[in-house]
Length: 304
Image (cartoon, rainbow, N blue to C red; front, top):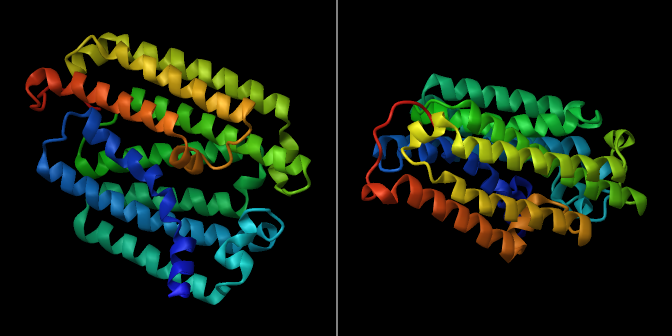
């Protein structure tokens, strides 16, 4: 039983919430009540989770020596020796094979193309991109953008420039917060990531503040743009901006004041304040998009 637990830990299912970005097109595209679109998005979500687990296995294989010097990552199955490299390779093949089978059997070819691009990007990240300052966080952010495109390709919902821009900016903000945590560990002699040579605390902290401002302005512009109002049938989306500002301020507080960022996943799982803000943002958006129409989908032209 313990070995099965090691394989589960290697797959990192706790990170699957990141693949929730696959669901954004059906949500913003007014397709929540479209059974076919929901089913296709569910298949896409499962395939992306399996593929993402394969990426984590590959990354752990590449980094197992470096991880052994990390205060937290040394407990990972490969770094600790709980699983061998051969077992990890077989597991990697099973994960990617399962993702490929679901994609080929149940999803459009466009989704498979996006999934392939995601895997290629992450393979390049594991091999060399993660050692290049700024390129590393950009690659991480593009991975989230590809999740959105995957959801759109699966469900047939067109993707707008707004959702792409906002996803990229938010992912870049979170990736910078993770690098700040790496810098703090490096200052304690607990991290040896090569890309840290291109960062320092002042640069990352300043950049995070700039990114937060850009996100807030971009989001507010999105909510009041004529295109958005026409597409969603409401001019009240600016009300959701309150939750966005509050969520960003809370994350900055966790990062700069409490210095407890680490993994964004861990922050989301443990911080009740952020959980409440995200829930209220989703609820407000849902009510504005669907509630005013008797919980029936809008039939407006355009994408998400």
